[in-house]
Image 1 (cartoon, rainbow, N blue to C red):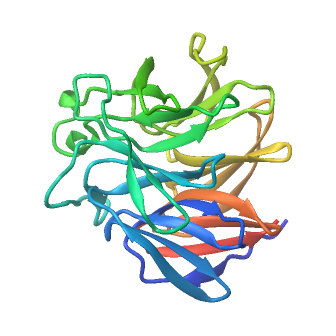
Image 2 (tube, helix red, strand yellow):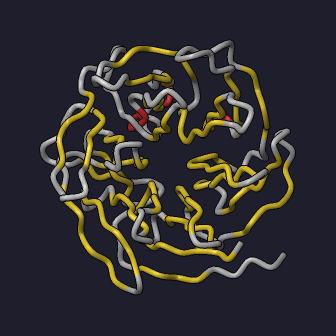
Image 3 (cartoon, rainbow, N blue to C red):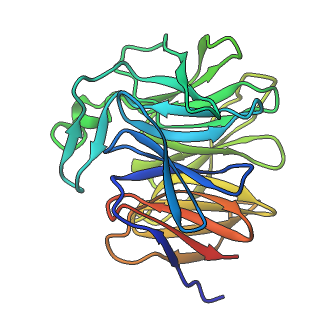
Length: 281
């Protein structure tokens, strides 16, 4: 099919983590401006400002928005990062419908620094999230990069380690069969873990994409997985076996970071251009 983007919002500061809210709004984070905003009917409203840099976001079963905050790093370009002042330790935050927020999970395992990136709720109501750790060194000293880890936060905010990873673990989603799919950005592939009531099995490769596609956020919709390629300026559409069905070309320099589905449309955040766009499904 022909994919034609509709641009809804421009002038944002590296948006990520779009989420469809009950009122029809599309909420999203803004790393560079450290805000959570929402779009509806041609209007953008601010939900809150946060310390650090809100990176990924999901709607929880309690109606609150849960945010993976990387501590204060936002891309200004493909080569330059902005560091918030002050930095905060990487954490999970919770934002209520009234605009008030609090810290949900702050004690994260690992050598640090922790940089929570994206998250997904488990069938049991816990939060699995990726922590690519010290990814800020990748441009200057790749040998100093620690890889990353997969973590899970319980309902009381306590966090435990699930798996050690490599190559910048990023977006993640639960497969319809109950397994967990995780994108590894620097390795151009998606991996799969069996999910066993709060623990994971061994990691196995599920899909390998071309070397110009760097997996970022992802969402399952019906029988397809949509995966943004922030490096590569495309969106991959895969079937439930991991077979590539189609690529959506989002255009040079578009930097698609994450996506959600609502109202028969695929909503996509474009990081460096600072836009919220959508495609009709």
